[in-house]
Length: 232
Ligand code: SAM
Image 1 (cartoon, helix red, strand yellow):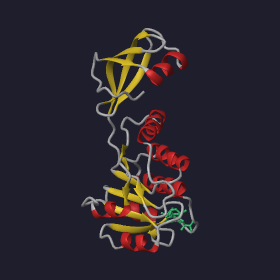
Image 2 (spheres, rainbow, N blue to C red):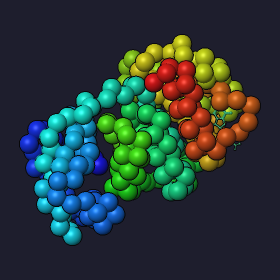
Image 3 (cartoon, protein in one colour):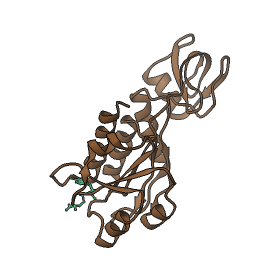
Image 4 (cartoon, protein in one colour):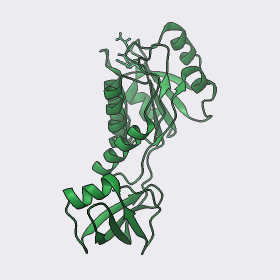
């Protein structure tokens, strides 16, 4: 379970709400039971239940099992999609090891905002399920123009373009460790946006194959190719 508190040997952690419910009602933990806790700072810890109530569970951290993992420095920059589809992007990007998810708003986006709390819950649950010890960062949605204007120096911006680009796997393998993949919305980028992206000095157009993929599929495909070619 990911906890807000930074863990250390002997630290006491009081859990309430859904996490206490999960431990007490679903896992039916009792005093002395072992539970693995994670914080996003120090990593994964073995803990023991010291009090198991119906609405709260108190645990004590014992020893650290795994340090916070080094996650490949890959950002996913997906245009906002319809809610359920974007939630899938958040979950799969967490499982596939993205270090940061930076949502972008483009002219053809159907959605223009994101429920950050819901997003963080989905990402935390995905991280617990896939045993990541580091949560992806989640950025505030930004407009494409601002994203390109403020793009960080030294980070490659792979632009997934269904109209063509370098084969993604080869581009990723040859590319730098600090990178990002930009994926468009259901309606794609319009001509002005495509021109703006391609004009950016750090942007490189990549192709994910001959078919037109949904945004969520393209995100998943790009991340899988990235992890596959770089063994991360
Ligand atoms: N132009 C598309 C159409 O005709 O339906 C709309 C965009 S597509 C549904 C969503 C996004 O996925 C695109 O903006 C692009 O970033 C990415 N994408 C889809 N297929 C791709 C491919 N074969 N190669 C690279 N990117 C792709």
